[in-house]
Image 1 (cartoon, rainbow, N blue to C red):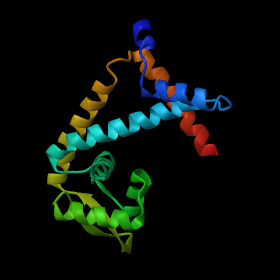
Image 2: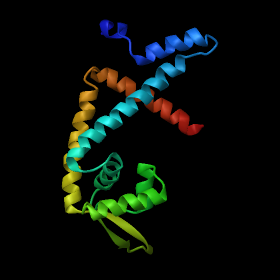
Image 3: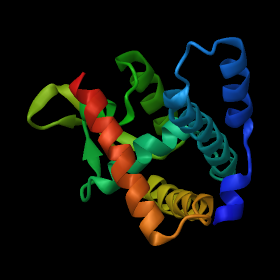
Image 4: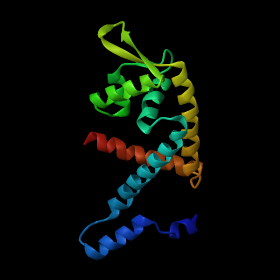
Length: 169
C-alpha cells in the first residue's frame, strides 16, 4: 500500500503547477474534487463502452435501471424517472420515445390521472437491463480492486459526507 501512495497521477502534476504559478491558492480541495471529476469521466466512458454491446446509452441505462429496481409492475411516471435520472422534461420525453421505439418499454395511461402516462418496462427491456446492469456491477467491482472492504466503506462514508454537505448548501 505504501508503494501505491508514492505513485503520482495527473492531478499531482496539476497541483504542483498551480503551487508554482499561484502559491496563494490552497489546492487541497482540488486534490479531492479533481480526482472525483476525473474518475467520474473515466467511469462514465467505461460504462458507455460496455453498454454498446446492449445497444443502449448511459442515460438509457439509468431509466431502465430505475424502472427495474422500482419492482413489479416496473412502471413509473416520467416525473418519477426524472428525479432519478436528473434530465429535463423534454430530454426525458425524447429518451422515452427512443426506448419505446426500441421495444424496451411501452407507455400506458396512468389510471390515477389520465393526463399522465406511465413508462412500463417491457419483457425485452427487462432482459436487456438485467444483462446490462450485471455488466455494470462487474465493471464497478473491477474499478475498485485496489481497495479492500474497509477502504471501500471509508470512501463510501466520506463521499456520502460530501454529498450531504453539498445538498444542504
